[in-house]
Length: 163
Image 1 (cartoon, rainbow, N blue to C red):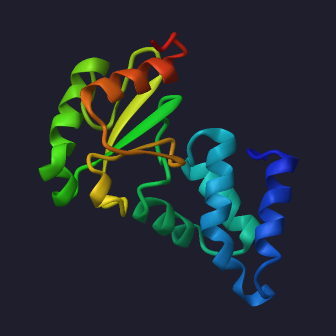
Image 2: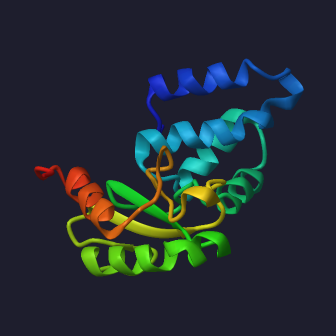
């Protein structure tokens, strides 16, 4: 088994929310729990979830590859997703992305050599008025990201002292 007993308990709580004939409705939550534990969802993990939920593996893969919140390849400790949808792009998203690329020394879908950061581009995050916006590890929204705020964020995530 790739997942811990604790992870399966979380998945069981998700499965309990649905009738027995609709277990597949818990697939997104199951993928999220698996990713939280493992850092990403491999083909083997998707197969294990499919068997556990009792649904076709291809259906799990379709969900995992459709939504960009699921990492189907290993990523760094901190995944930073920059919104590059048109409103954000026009409101500083491209500038913010270029600054991050230069600061981290990687391009989109790249991971720093130390495994600390992965940079991704993302579609609308629903915060156009706060552009440019970034999402850290799919959980933390960062708004109005100036170069100084980006530098502070990277220092914070790196564990360095922030002035």
